[in-house]
Amino acid sequence: MFLARKITRAKWESQHELSADEIPADAITSDLRTRGNSLSFWQCGIAERGQLDEAVLAIAAGRDSVEKVEIIWLAEDELEADGQTLKNTEGRTPVTGLSRSHVDVCGLDYVRLGKIAHGIVRALKEERHLKLSKIRVRKLLTSAVGQRRIDVNDLGDKVRAEIMQSLQSGNGRS
Image 1 (tube, one colour):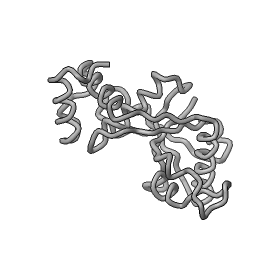
Image 2: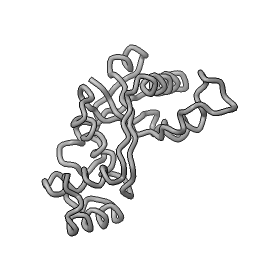
Image 3: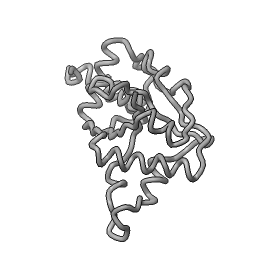
Image 4: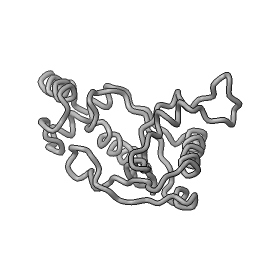
C-alpha cells in the first residue's frame, strides 16, 4: 500500500549551491509543513492511476482554488520500517467516502521528518510522482460533482465558481 502527498517537485530539484545529495530547505519547509508533529497523507492503494486520481481529488477538493497538483507516493511499509507511526484519521475533504482514506504520520521529530524527506527524494528518483494539469484537476472535480460525490456547496468559493462554470459550459466532462 502507498500513501500520497502533494508536493512542489521543482523545490526538490538540486540547487546550484547544494550538492546532489543535499535536500533543499525550501522543499522541507514548504512541502513538509507539519501540524501537531503530524504530516497528512492520502491512501492510494497500489498506486494505479485511478487510485492516484482519488488522492488528487481528495486534495484538490479541499483547496481554495483549482490548480495543478503534483503528488508523490511512499510505501507504507517503508515508512513503518523508518520508525514512522501511521494513524488513520478523518481527512478534511468534501468528497464523499474519501475522508476515511486519510492517514497521518504522527510523532514526528527532526530525524523522522528527515527520513520522510529522503523518502520523497527516493520516490522522485524512482518516478513515483504524478503531475495533473489544472484542466485535469478541474475535470476530476467536475466529474465528482456530477456524480454527486461532492456537494458543490461544500467547495471553496473560487473552486465552486470554476466548477459551476465548467458544468454550465460542459467543459468538465472526463
